[in-house]
Image (tube, rainbow, N blue to C red):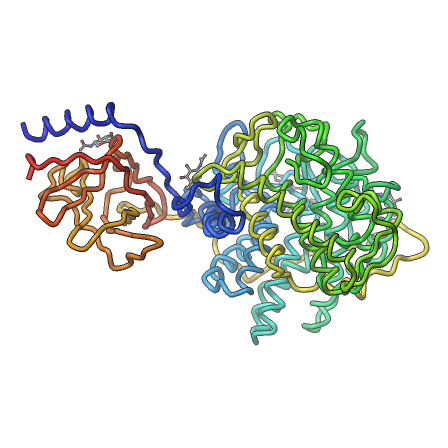
Length: 622
Ligand SMILES: *[C@@H]1O[C@H](CO)[C@@H](O)[C@H](O)[C@H]1NC(C)=O
Ligand SMILES: *[C@@H]1O[C@H](CO)[C@@H](O)[C@H](O)[C@H]1NC(C)=O
Ligand SMILES: *[C@@H]1O[C@H](CO)[C@@H](O)[C@H](O)[C@H]1NC(C)=O
Ligand SMILES: *[C@@H]1O[C@H](CO)[C@@H](O)[C@H](O)[C@H]1NC(C)=O
Ligand SMILES: CC(=O)N[C@H]1CO[C@H](CO)[C@@H](O)[C@@H]1O
């Protein structure tokens, strides 16, 4: 009877009391709308990294049934179905993780090695693009999450994946070599890289589907990342005493790359058959993924982020979205806007993309890094319009870092770059999750949710903002364009990598250690308990509620927490309860919280809550 009256009491209370929104994220201590960009970035960074880890098999919480080392593009399974593993998205994600590993996050190592073993397996898998014997199978864009071939019609082949995978594996290999583990490189990573380099050298001059999987032709992004891969692949081969015959194609790929410049912007695609403007985010993505911090000048040949053609292109591409999206209306040129894939896009409504908007910021952060390193900035007739957005009267010329013009322009461009990130802050929901797109009219998240590539883009944009740059890929020795372009290609050699580990689906756990964290400022003598409708939480009986610990309590995070082992699949209601100095229990306000212990492979899960105000004193229950 006591229990029943208590439940009634709660239900009535829930109706009467104003509902406090439930904020399940680390970012709950400040109102997002009023937080500074720095604070947003600080709170979002662990969420973005976790967002990636959640999507990687076999332990990721959003990757149930995904083979070890494979990463899903998104957990969304319908409209759109992205629960597959793409070679491109995976490689871009793991390049970001390798860079984070090199920067000090040593926990990522086994994940990276699982990815490498999984890629060795995928290389050998016959598929609808072909198989490994002549390399054609490496152009297959995506696979099923259990590591089998995808057998439905698709925009295939896509020739950027092998180049990007080589780049990710080369970054890790170079770290291994400088840390004394050349044998892992020789036996495990090089055989995979070598196949990918062979593919690039043999097929770079064949048509491909672009990174948006829609346009058959030649794509700036693909050509740019192919050039980079062969240059750094050649250097790695030399370092470990191997040869890379295909890498000799690099100058010809560079020669072809030059032809994408159309006079005032870069053509996103050529040799294509659609009627689009060719203004395309793929150009900015190509630029940031071939940025070389060691480039000695703002080289135009490799479209370095600070080159005049890259800046002119940045303006043309970003301005092309100012009028097509109503959320961009009224934002002046020189201030960040939501960036989509290309202005004519209609896919899933054709909206701004999180990763596009962050890429626009990242190119500018990279350019700022380069100007600072060079010690000057040049305004040319090609880049004049870009710079005039920040100083209408600026004239062409070279401005050294001690000049007022340099200071004015670089300060304004930093603010410009940040304004793109501030839009991300504005259009990110309070749980910090990134979808693929945000609505062109009201900014609400759209299309696939928890998009791995969106999270990876956040990590790379923030690293660039912090001046934490990736290793050089060798641009200074690879920026001379042959006088005559030729489409010659090199026949590659392909061998099945031998050092592989099995691709096994994850093992589902039966019990999950759920850690409940609640932020609540308490004073001495007060204690926080966890009560709920299941026996493990005392069946709403405060006498059997779970006492939480305050050992990690801090003023800035007044954390009370406790871990409860619960069977996978358990649905529960719960609330936090404050036990006062006088022994009385006060339930937090609002509706009962609900939680589902998901069936999956993760044996642990963290729940982050904030005390809901307006509690009810239930002295009668004690
Ligand atoms: C690989 O593809 C080639 C060319 O299509 C074909 O002749 C060969 O039988 C295939 N090999 C395997 C192992 O599937
Ligand atoms: C092949 O290369 C030549 C020379 O650069 C170029 O003109 C042609 O467009 C390229 N075709 C493809 C499909 O890459
Ligand atoms: C994104 O992933 C988180 C963590 O697994 C999950 O709580 C959230 O519901 C997901 N968001 C969407 C919109 O699916
Ligand atoms: C606890 O609450 C959940 C969610 O409302 C419900 O599905 C579940 O059956 C309840 N469990 C018990 C033991 O009452
Ligand atoms: C050329 C080749 O090996 N094609 C294979 C690609 O994968 C599909 C599906 O697994 C096979 O049916 C093809 O034979």
